[in-house]
Image (cartoon, rainbow, N blue to C red; front, side, top):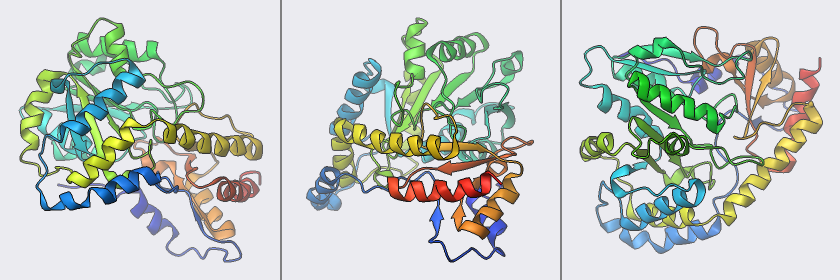
Length: 373
């Protein structure tokens, strides 16, 4: 089984022989990890629940956490999930890797399609599933949104990602409705990775579940979404996520998960339930990112994306720009070509605006010096 090197490993190799300018303090804008402390009320609940470490957690998860997640989905998307339409997961990275393996296992010649550039777990899952890969290319010409065509007839599983990592594009409800209709017409399973749904500027992004309901597919046939607390609550260490949608598909996947060994420890579940139940800290998080993007607009004169905390910055040469930025100004960004295949992402860098306002302004000022040369 041959996997590609992860983008961050490629970045280490790219910068290995580059000497950064030590007149500047190092700033790393490569990884989508919030650099704000997890809210204190979440930390307090985790500490208060530490006595539960002597108990094995259920694979299916505790009712308290299920209720908190279902309440979040109802509050945010006006969707009332049943227990059969929801599976709690250990974050979303593990489900994005093992769900395709489960779902595609019995397919004779599986075909998996996903957006390109992409979160590399999608590719890893396809490789582990022995699936033929079809890329849904995201380009300037299509506003970095995946396009529907007849080649999807051969697909068994399609993964889209809105709001998108790395391009920060957001699909409208009417666009998501077209994808639901395509999934029903061509009979493929459609999964939307919605991990950035709560990091938006002004208008809350739509969920694929909403689109499914809007076209009358109220049982979510062929439709799944995943989401996570990591970005929403600045708490990636809680590893709290879920997959929701088609109950017939999730019934077998739920049983499969009893063998996977990804049950979340009870203290983490208690803390996660508190986090999913609260919206105030999420509003505060959004305000932080809103300020960061206001700075990006002022300093770089770039359009502010509708969601995520990424800038998808166009440059002449993404590898050269990354090396020169590190050498001259001690700032690390991620070349877009490390996140795509067949030329996707080339000529762009991903900039994660995950620091406080002060550090973000400093980083953007340094980037601006090189970007304008």
